[in-house]
Each structure stands twice: as structure tokens, then as C-alpha cells.
Amino acid sequence: MCLDNILFRLGMAPTIPGARQLVNHGHIRVNDHMVDIPSYPCKPQDVITIRDQQRLRAIIKKNIDLFQRDKLPNHLTFHSLQYKGFINQIIDSKWINLKINELLVVEYYSRQA
Image (cartoon, rainbow, N blue to C red; front, side, top):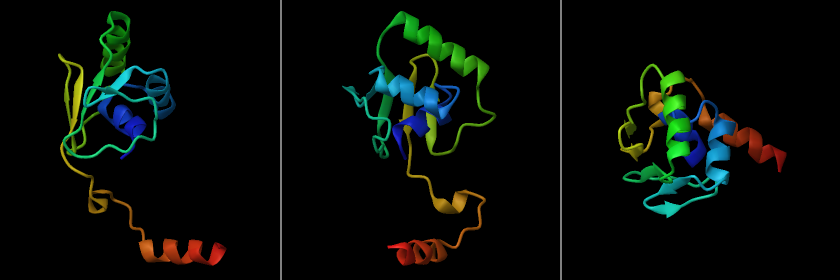
């Protein structure tokens, strides 16, 4: 669960590259610590906020209004008034509707080495 993907899923950015840019420019805080690594691994109970800047709040609000997802994933919670996102739990691979035999993937890549 990378930070850039979570920002995208929360609706704070219209695309994953847009979310990466928000993180790279230092606009995102995780548990009140500035994070500038888009691949930062998030864990349950993490609180994701934005830097307190009026212009940034306007951008995030526009993204949320324009690109609001149909339904927020169950493992995330977003409070739009506070511009705060919460990670409730780790996403389970069974929730994803892809039928992937993980053993075949591991077997394929172990032959490549």
C-alpha cells in the first residue's frame, strides 16, 4: 500500500502520477511527519493529511469534487472537511476480483534468475 496509490484512491489526486507529484513536492504528511517518497509504505492506523496551505486545499477540494470515486474502498476512510485520510486495514487480495495463481507468478520469475 504505497502512499501515491492511497492518495489516488482517496480522491486527493486525479491520477497516480498526480499523487506522486503531491508527495514529491512535500505537500503530504503521514502521522504529522512530512513524507516526500511516493512509494512510502503505509500501514493500518496511519493518518494522511495535507500541508496547511490555502492554495493546496483548493487544489485538493477541486480534485475531490471532480474526480470523486463512485465508492471509497473499505480499507480507507476520508474526512473531507479536515482533508484527512485514514487507513483502516490492509487490503486483502481476496477482495480483488482477479483470478491469479500467485504460485505460477513466483515460479515464472524464479526461472528468470
